[in-house]
Image (cartoon, rainbow, N blue to C red; front, top):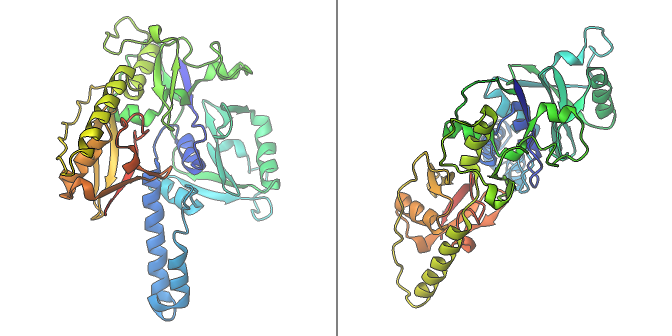
Length: 392
């Protein structure tokens, strides 16, 4: 039996998202889903304030709150505890703040922190998770290079030290957290696309037995949880990560009958995360340059031909979410070797707005996609992106 531990690494200021996903041991939440929760909380707060304040929506407090913008997410992607708590409540999990200065149960023999399966810790703008997995506690801080083991004996002292150092520690007090990802010997394991997406990038998974060795070279070939596997993956920040040389890349079209269950897991994940082929990207770049020259010589807007959605079995298939100008959400799959202009073709077809009047912006990190039209979707790092569309 092989046990794997999921550990998202820090991307920009998305530590709140990382803390939730590390708690749940999969890629459950993305910036778009958390933004929607933050927006809903903002609207509810304004609604209550508009009803209760004297003067209603014309009151000074209401107008000041409205001018301040979101109180639940800032431009850098920091989320409030209300957002994290609401996200977990939606799936039946509750958090409770515990602290020795305010909680009377501290000092009681009944207060054994090791009976809890998870903790979310916060200080200033940083969030991280401590999880019990396979009866061991792991510090899954996204700022750390790899999960760090905490013994049962040390856990209480670690929690107390965090609280003394100014951290708020939220205990998971309701709901069932997912267990560690386990593959039994001889188990025939296959993954559907949605499951691959939820598993997240290959580089976020660690083999427990490797972590137990406490090897100081975290990503060395003898300590990389996927070191014996070939192939490549796509990180959340759009950069590629691979093991082995280009000549050793796994053939994703080959049969899996002779592979071990571990190889099949990695192969299935890599199938949805592998980076674009260099030759295809080069070809697209050449086409992009030609198209750009043609457009410069012709001021008439040429309709873009929208390619049909790639099939589910296509390893280059990526999912992108759009929020159209009318507020409606759309989700569509693309081949990551296609040019970004395909996104404009799709949005134009869905909204009825001409391509020249469209402005597309990525949610986080904020990016003006209008400047990336000559790139491929892979080069622009738009896999899994949530894009806001505006008519200009």
